[in-house]
Structure formats: structure tokens, C-alpha cells
Image (cartoon, rainbow, N blue to C red; front, top):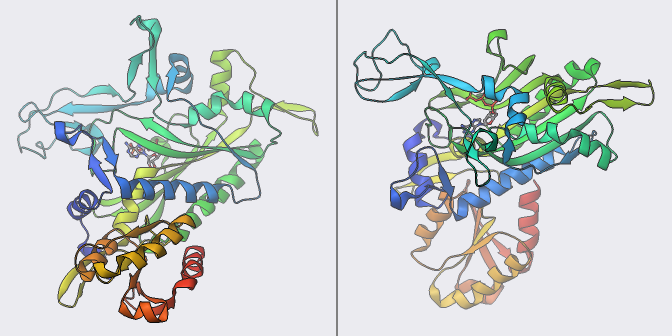
Length: 439
Ligand code: ATP
């Protein structure tokens, strides 16, 4: 996927492309927006769904069973007390008394002046709780406090017993979930990289303690292969194991998969060995037995957990950076997204050379649409402009119906990356697209 002009990409260019082409809009923009929250437009929604689909397919493609769960966003206080989030899930922050900007203490140097205004006048560092708190029901007191989940994982742990007793799964197995998570980040930034409302794709893989190292390594390889398979540039991916003092309160080992964004190598996904911390904690606080019985050894045990946790929006942003390409075509600058065809929001654009040919072209469009391909029909503007529009949303191929098509029942297929043009029979378009999406 790596383009020829990778160094030309910048955050500003991605933000502008996202708005221009309907990938992402700032939430409530007509009211001035809401910091760290975004809406996804028509094209962005498809890309997001494609990411989720490909993740799910991949995570369920291994020999061990992986089943699904869709937990609630709201949860009672005890869940987060047990998980340790009430106590530990906070960041230290300081404010600049001069320009009023707020920073996470681990992101700046307190002995230096404020990076925003250049004056050194910090407030005392304070803890900042990252969970969004709300009240459930008519009475707003301490007993009605609930939280919007800051990670999807806990829904899996608190349902562990239900899943065991309502399905036939046996250890080792995984429970996967895709869903919204909320964090009142001190400093949301870098567009979709750090936001306050996002979607996580998490897998909690339950195994015996003695196999935990083996599965930890195994999932690191599996997740690495996933990113290579979706087409990320291998040179931009690296692994970083957490130092002991960096580990979250629940984990014994953690490997971050990082991507080289224009703002540096940053976490794309975390793979953590969570031990059996969460199940033990929920067992303690709820008073319910969350152990598993092994009939072969006649023993009960609390399984250990390997977690793979990634953010849909972070992968979305990574794909945009990684596939962004600029080149000059016939003296004009062109922007294209060299997305893997499986992820590209639109499979193919169906274009009449002139409006006079729209009627015949729409038939091709309707036929492919009815066969469940994501296709777009576009008749307005010069053909060059229409190609550019499709290039910018990463459409791998455009089919153009011209006057010759009336005679030979063929269209011109133009490839987004090679710009190669070849004639294809209209009755072969379905096969052509199937092959393209299968590769
Ligand atoms: P950080 O240290 O950057 O705040 P974290 O280590 O707390 O992140 P995790 O709890 O490991 O993040 O979250 C797992 C994944 O969820 C991350 O790898 C990322 O893809 C995604 N994620 C976490 N927080 C955010 C956020 N604020 N915005 C977008 N995605 C996020």
C-alpha cells in the first residue's frame, strides 16, 4: 500500500480530505463542535464497517473458537470498582495559568515553559478521572452513579459465567466484542488518534495459566500478520514491550504494536497478558464463583487472559496515512488512497463518458448494486474530475461507458494505482470485481 510520496502526507491534509470527501465531520459542527468527538460521513461509515468486518473475520479464523458478545455501554459502579478503574484510571494533569491550556503531565516537561504560550506558570498537578460519570434513574445521588464504559473488556469479564453456562465453549477460547468506549481524555488530539468517544475491537482469550506465554506470543504474531494482510507498510510498524513500571495495574506483560505516524511512533494496538486479575476481582466483589471446572483433571481454576485491544478510529486514521499518495498526472496534482480493495469504501465507480450515455450506464450500476457490490454512479463533471473524486476515496477501479461500448458491450476499466486502462466485457464485470476483492 505504501505510496511513492509517503513523506508528503500530513495531519492537515488528512483532516481536509476527510471533510471534503465525507469520511469524517466534527460532531455538531454547526454549533461549534465538541472537542474530541467526531461523526463519520457516508464514505467514512463504510470504511469503518469494513475495518470491523475484516477484524472479525480475522479474529475468528484461527483454530480456537472465538465467540461474540455485545455488552451495554452503561455499567454500575461496582464493575469499575472491581476492575480497578475507579482507583487507577486517571491521568495527572496541569494547567497553564497564563494561557489556560491543559496538559497531561507525562506529555510535557514541567521544568520547562508552557509549549503553547512560552510562559512557565503551572498549577499543581492533579489527578483527572477519565471515566464519564452519569446518574441512572430519577434520583441523582451517590447510589445512582453509573459509568460509560472506558473499555469494552469488562463487559466480557462480567458475562463470563453466563457465556460458559449458555454455550458449549471450552478453554482455550476467546470472546470478542466491538463497541463504543468513552474516555474523558485530558488532551484529545491528533484528529482521530485520541478522542473521547471511540469504538474498540477487543478479544479476551481465556486459557490455562501454563499456556499463557505461548498464547501471548501467538497472538502477537497473529495481530502482526493482520496488519500486514490489510496492507500497512511493514517498515512503519514496530513492536514495543512495556517496561515493568509502565504496565497497567491488571497486566503482567504488554506488547504495543506501534505505527509511525507523522507525529511519531504511537500505539495502534495493545496485546496484554491480563493474568486472571479481572475474573478474580469480579469474583471477590460480586461474591460469585467465576471458576471453570476441568473434568480431565477434576480441578476448578480461574482462567488466565490474553487480550488484543485496538481502536477502530485509530486503525481508520492509520489506513488513511498509510495509503495517502500524491502524484502528478497530465500536469495536474492527484491525491489517491491506495487502500486494499477489500477495505476501500467503494468497490467500483460506474461512469458514463457523457450524460448522453447515462441510461445504458445506470443499468450496469444497478446490476452490480443488486449483486451487493458497493458501487457509485457519477455523471457530473469531466471524466478526469470524476476519476480524481474516486481516487481520493480509494476506489480501486472505475468503469467508463463510452460510445464504443454501444457497439462492443465493453467498458474501460481504469486502475487507481497503475492508471492502466483496459477494455472489459460488461458481462465480465462481476467476475472482475469478485477477483479484485478476493485477492
Ligand atoms: P494511551 O496510553 O495512548 O492513552 P492506552 O494504553 O490507555 O492508550 P488502551 O487502554 O490500551 O490505551 O486502549 C486500547 C486501544 O484502544 C488503543 O490501542 C487504541 O487503539 C484505542 N484507544 C484507546 N484510547 C483511545 C482514544 N482516546 N481514542 C481513540 N482510540 C483509543
